[in-house]
Length: 180
Image (tube, rainbow, N blue to C red; front, side, top):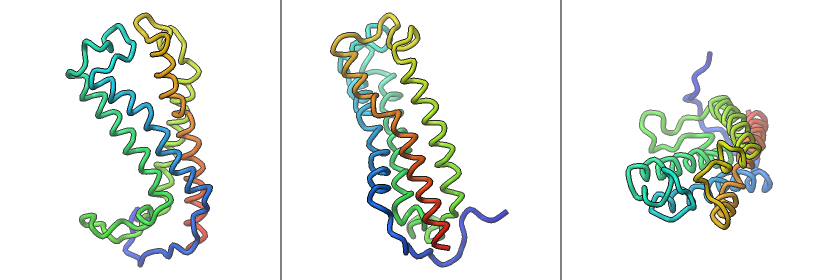
C-alpha cells in the first residue's frame, strides 16, 4: 500500500482545468450558502415560521451554536470541492505542518470525494422527495405560507451538491491520471 502523501517533487499542473469543471466546483460550494444563511438567520432569532422547539422564542440560545456550527461545517465541506480544481488539491501548501509541500495522492482526494458525493446525493435526494412528508415540512409546527417558501428556496439548491461534486471528482481523477 502506498502512502497517501508522497515526497516526490510536485506534479506539474500541465493540464488546465476546463471552465465547465471550474464552474461546477464553484457551484458545488455555493449550493450550501442559502441553507447556511437560513440556519444562521434562524440562530440569530429570525422568525423562520416554526412554532415548536425551532420557534423564534428559542433563539438565540443554546441551539444557535448547533445551527451556526452545522452551517460552517457544511460550507467547509463544500469548499473542499475547490481543492479538486486548485493547486492545493494536488500539493499541500508549504505552511501545512509536517506534510507541507508533499503531493496529494490521487486516491487520497478521489475516495473521500466520491464517498461524499454518493452520501450527499442520497441524503439530499431523499430529503427532497420527503420534503412535504408528515416527518418534515408537513409536521405540526413547521413553517407555512411565505416562511415555507423561503425555507424551500434556501434548501432547493442542495440536491445539486452531490452530482456537482461527482462531476468535479471524475474530472480531477482524469486530469491527475493523465499528468503522471
